[in-house]
Picture 1 (cartoon, rainbow, N blue to C red):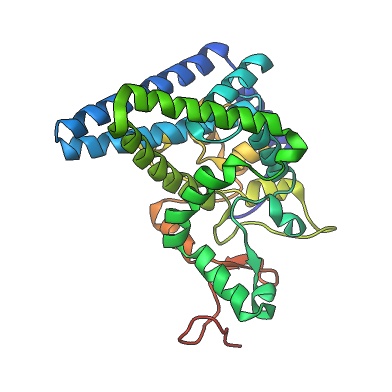
Picture 2: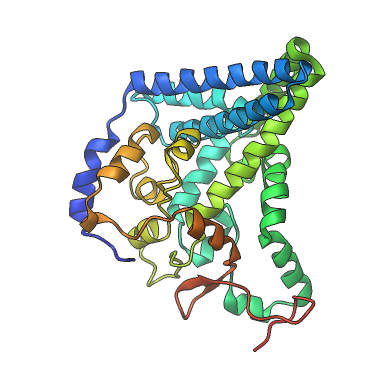
Length: 337
């Protein structure tokens, strides 16, 4: 099922779910920060006690808490976590320390991502770059090799998060447009936070934090990839580009279980988020569960299809779908016609 539902009916259905609550926003914020803090301290204590399995579990909890804090910061960027703008902006700046993501630049770049979703002529705004099948066939072998490595799931999941959160976000794209001092202030805050961890929890604290941050990057890249990379996603060019179709058909709805939703702040229901970014994360799961069948744009994606989606690499403009690499020679660089 891939069809655009009645727009007026969908807008009317979604409107009540855009209600923001300072209380619910504060509870989501403080409870997640509390879980983060407890997991960090317990993780250090368990490592020092030699309880490696339990310590590993705390690293996983800490990683998911970090991802959830990023999602809450993302909510703040849409002015959706709290009812008041000042609370959203203040919380967004604080959360940047835990998400490793400068708030204002994230907000600017992410709004561009929303504005140009599905636009083949503005793929610079996407989190995961996608070549078209025609571009692949015309590309020289060095670019094909680069793209194969870039879209390799092992490389993407292991190194993608490290590059994005540890390197790229220290000076993100459009920093000079949005303001350099905000990024500098963020980096100083992050350095101060790491100094506090070192002073209070020692080298073990830094090690637990670093391991969890790397794992959070893996989870983050996994989620971001699946949000827009699935077989029947949507890409097009003007003048036929349809923004509303892009928001619904170009964004997935992932059903990976309630525990996954808890750890990732319900961001799996990404089609509804793109259609109406004003829906707070604490309303998204309920909104998706109560969405009438006639207003659903496509079927949900579950674990088996989610894993299979990583074999999809190129956008076929003629077929209107994401496809694997064409059959290649043994080296895996030259495509067969």
